[in-house]
Image 1 (tube, rainbow, N blue to C red):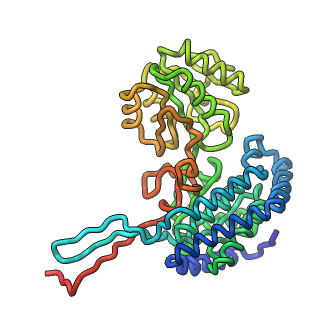
Image 2 (spheres, helix red, strand yellow; image 1 turned 90 degrees about the vertical axis):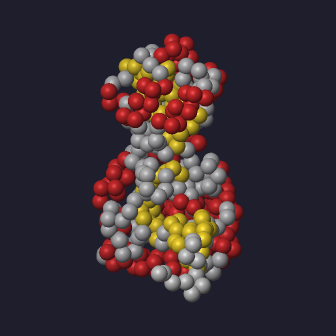
Image 3 (tube, one colour; image 1 turned 120 degrees about the vertical axis):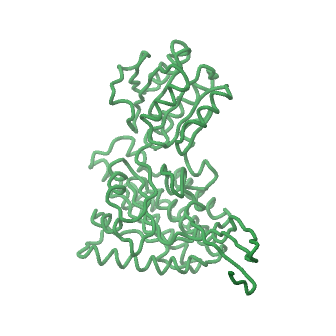
Length: 417
């Protein structure tokens, strides 16, 4: 690991190089960006043994640091997960290039023809923790959208991220694109994060990927605009008109498939009319699957406390509560949710429409697991994060969401009277 004596100078150099690369990427040919991503995918797959070996160093570091099983799961790479990284790179490569796409166009009585077209944001800074696949996802999406990116991975994923980053750079070189288009901060020193958060001269937007501590710090300290979600406090509401088989399947998947991701269900709400039957059956099934259910109005592993609601467990733990109806479920989510993802299980169109209309989380689902809150599952190939704010990007942030727009105005000697 590089020893850094002057962090400000290091980060300024990275920032200047990123700004120069962004200027070139803004007009790079779609074919070049696609070729770079395809070459990067080939490099990742060819180098999978070296990536897994690097990841073993990170796993050892994580064990020594005392990471939870859920965090270790987020950190771990095997051949199947590397295959998913490769598939993500190829999927992003195959997407239509968003840069220059015409969003709208119209003519004015004055004689002006106006087009609103997509344009890159410029330089994106991504600060993330233990998931090394973010290196590939963020690099690919920023390149596809014509943005340079500065990646600052977590200390836990340091070696894995370096190995994956080397593959991305190999792709850039193969396609003749500037290597500084995708840069990885070469140190675990947290001072690099502070430099990024105030680098308004070089970075146009910051995207944090990690736990509440990291995201809260970024939102509090950043002078650069931020795309972020603080927590993934996702709810599943089982309505009185829920199909029992669908409800059982969806709730178990939403909680247990992967507990350490932001789309994992953290709270189960059950309509009073089905609490003693379907609701209790779901709770029993969760406990049988090894989930600790902290329940109110249901027989769980233990009674729920007030602190259990509005909490992101990221573990085999879920809060559960009986509610009077869909409106009570909506009220609970408005109070305790984080505007990430909520699901309703119901066969009632009216209940589903009420749920969809009266809640304003970034993602709302019907009869589907909250674990689908993922850019890849939305057809974006990958995502750089889930944005829960209401400005610009919302929900999974893919290549298109990493663009802004500009107006191209054409006249014919047109003057304003």
